[in-house]
Amino acid sequence: MDPPRQYARFRHESPITRISLGSGAPDAWLVTRWEDARTVLAHSATSTDMSRPAFPTRSHVAMPPGFFLFQDDPVHDVFRKVLTREFMVKKIEALRAPTLEILDGVLQRMVSVGSPADFVEHVALPLPSLVISELLGVPYADHEFFQHHSRVLIEGTVTGEQKASAQQALSDYLEDLVVRRLREPQDDLITRLGRQLSTRDAADVGSFLLFAGHETTANMIGLGVLAMLQHPEQLPLLLENPVGAIEELLRYLTIAQSGLGRVATSDIPVGGVTIREGEGVIVMLNSANRDEAVFPDADVLDLARPNARQHVAFGYGIHQCLGQPLARMELQVVLPEVFRRLPALRVAGSVTYKHTAAAYGPARMPVEW
Ligand code: HEM
Image (cartoon, rainbow, N blue to C red; front, side, top):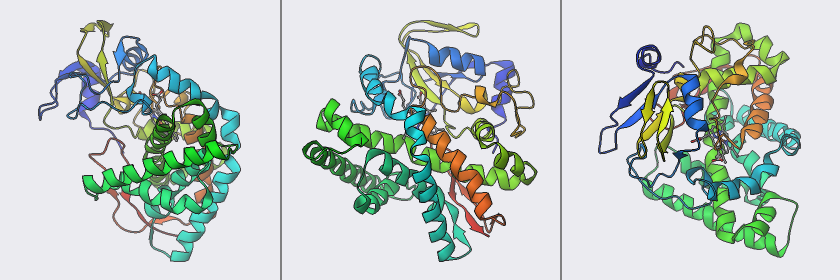
């Protein structure tokens, strides 16, 4: 569960360093310290537009406006403002009881299948997609369709063609749902998006929320359970104070393992170097969250850590995770409850991990109880 050791060396010897990504991708700066990570991510002269030639990636594609993480202000700001109210803590709190019900359902199904069962397939993956269905206002009858295609989207073993066709199916479905909701409005997010945005943009925002909030939360649920199984002595802390415990799990596990990409749109002085206009940067959140200058004994999981909430697992600056109140609520509900319901839960075979995916987590996790 630790990031590669080299990052600790970088933090001490060359915290901001030039790196080569190979395979035709442009060279970039690698930022490894917490303070420098925040400086870069909060800087107004940074772009997330992946179509810029210096963006640290191999696929320089322009994303549709509704995928607003990849847009700069003012376009980004238009979408973010439409959604800000939807993710306010009060709104998300209303999803707490439905989330517990969804957890009940998926746990019951896993238990009825019998032990051993794959925790990722039965709990970690379906739960966040069902919660996002609830948030958007996907009718109950369509949950299975929605879940099937969203699962294909993040499945490691399917072909690019299958993924593209799942993306198209979801996008068509959401567009159709927006049109239906404009005819017969409901008190749900899809209706509100349809009123404020074009049908295409509203459907793209729906797809993007699914993309941003499904696998990320699923990985945190799976890894969170594994981390607790490795540190059973800290289980009482999770059960007594899930709010604080989740922050430390977010810091320690930092699932955004490949870092956040940016392009400098003017010179950025940071940590003693100058990132020049037009150069690419990768901000390593997993290294920043293990920075000893901020988190003493940073490689130790300590659910009582007083400043765990200073982590940057959700990023920082204008693109800081919009879904964090939702992700926090889901983790606060799910992680303690899984151990309350299944106190004898244990791993029952070899766990496989997504080493090369943008978001780190277990791909398969056989458990018994
Ligand atoms: C534990 C789970 C999650 C983690 C670790 C996570 C992490 C992140 C990170 C690191 C970013 C910043 C990306 C960047 O600056 O380049 C981000 C952005 C974002 N996340 Fe999350 N996320 C999680 C769950 C969610 C959920 C549940 C949703 C919503 C359903 C969501 C929606 C978004 C959106 C919309 C953005 C883009 C914000 C913007 O550009 O203004 N995330 N997330």
